[in-house]
Length: 258
Ligand code: ZN
Image 1: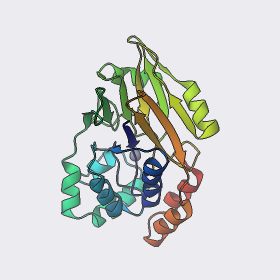
Image 2: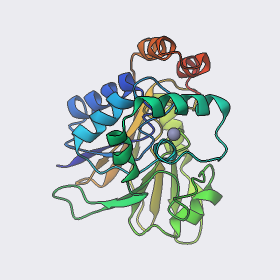
Image 3: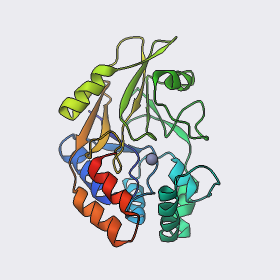
Image 4: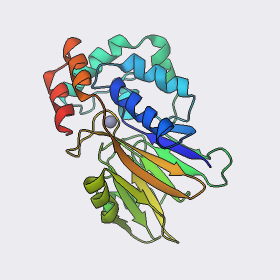
């Protein structure tokens, strides 16, 4: 049996990262990990989170915040994110930033012992370098045209969602969304002939009004995906943000999950 934990948008939240990795290992028997970017930014532990991900020695793709610490752009980043970015850049040494700069934008991953592969990308497969967002089925359609594996996992919006593609049009899997909201857990069993684009939500800064960390699990033997929420110590993550002097809004939003 091979189970891969798929984590995204950690954003320097070490408390959430430790809770999710613990859940993946102890509760879900995951033996492998992949990370779909935005390891850093916003929260108080960029070095600790980056070092932890490197220790996992797993496939990683680049997020827009990971790119920003290496090559700051004039692009639209809101003032709070910009301030956190400045602080983050000062924390990360050259070696860590160099490692981030070497990450690819998308990868195809084959879990050990599996014949099936899946794709990982932070934003979209059709425009991975301009960081566009998939917020509806129409946006997903563009990415599906470039998807050669049955499953693609992404992040970037910090909102977990499941999109399906029948070769002509995309649709949102509302049942999966409903289950996740109601139970903090949902299973995605693929329908024959469909491809799936699954946003795994955010480990370190959820934005769907649920403060719990979110991640996904791919079971290669059953060929199915689980998305689940994990409780973590939000108060300690908030205290850390305040103690390093990052904007109060960043602490407050973790409590609201948005
Ligand atoms: Zn992000």
